[in-house]
Length: 340
Ligand SMILES: [Mn+2]
Image 1 (tube, protein in one colour):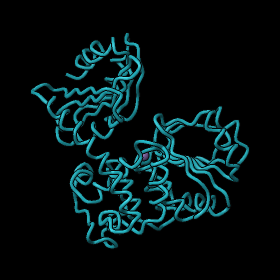
Image 2 (image 1 turned 90 degrees about the horizontal axis):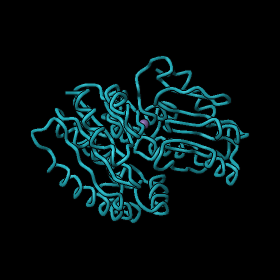
Image 3 (image 1 turned 135 degrees about the horizontal axis):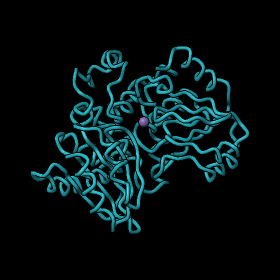
Image 4 (image 1 turned 60 degrees about the horizontal axis):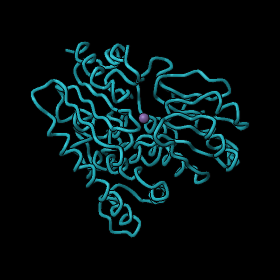
């Protein structure tokens, strides 16, 4: 758990810069983390780290171009030394994934001291203490109950989230829907994504987004509705694969947008007793998300990858993996052996 002292330190880092560059993960938690800091600071620029949550040397070019006086890394799971080496301004990294040790980085991660995995947007809220609605969207989007929920309910009674498990909050409340809307807005053409993010830096609150009566909220609605439609189509297809089997496996081609992580979360919510594998075929590989609400899936995944061409990892109950198309059947058989 981070302490009030840590939050103050992070705030000081924000206060003591004038041209920050923010790298953030491309999910609702990462996006809300950025929005919380940017809306507080009102300076700087944000860069969404797409496809792989990893900062490597090629991102250093973005730093050279923008010439910030400080770099913030928000909710990005992996930062490589080759990135850090190329940066000659202070780096502040706020994250809640598996802790990593890097030289020269001001690192804030509640898991370093075996703390809870509070999402990054929760941490960012405790730092800036404003825009609680964004922190709630980001936190619920990460399948987590905010530790400031009472405060949120008090400030936004029409969006009140009662006592419920985080999955239900994500799939049955208005805030949960907004979390899903945020993940849709991060998909597609990078220019449209950047415009959407810019709009979100100026939006007044959750009601404005849902009402879609201002030109800026209308713009968001036009975009996310189209993406949501594609998602719903895939979800319908995936649900057809729910049989008596303990596994729900759904593969879809890569010419479509990636909804792998969103699909696996929602299917786990609807089928909590099943092991969920959602994959997308690309360049002779299957890139997939694995979910389980029963047994930890991470140790099973590690064993299932032995003798298979591929890699993977993640959290105990939620993993990502990539295996050769030709090895996929064997990989699934291995998983069955480990889990059933
Ligand atoms: Mn996160």
